[in-house]
Length: 171
Image 1: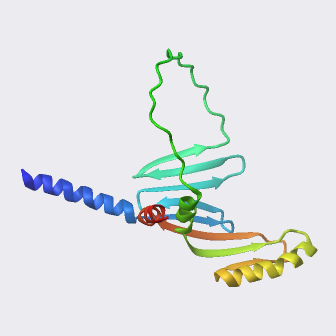
Image 2 (image 1 turned 120 degrees about the horizontal axis):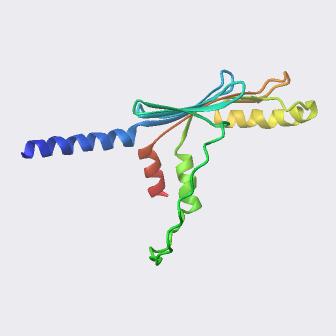
């Protein structure tokens, strides 16, 4: 009897550890039109552009769902309104401070960054070129201005739930 309880408890601990340390990955690649968000092997979502529609493709634990964003949704039937009930005071909700939010944002790691922008305005490109060059040297990632009419964005951002929780409670 206690062996089964121990096995169930061990399994729950392993699931919690996996959820805490599974990588949350955001991939943006305008070169091959990949815009993807994934959480370990549990969940992934992509945005796909086609000629006349935009699709969100979700995969959650093997379950697949394709959602057409531009397709009008079916009208929902109206549910009769309930009679108002007495409101229960549940206390005040306090939003997290900017310090905590900034701490969580800083916990994200920029693994890959290749940004190349052309504004279409030569004088503005000339003004922005040194600024982007200094920014590129400061963060050691490839960020730049080009003069060829090419706009490119390749970014990979990673984080884990454990790192986000640590940053939230630490700040």
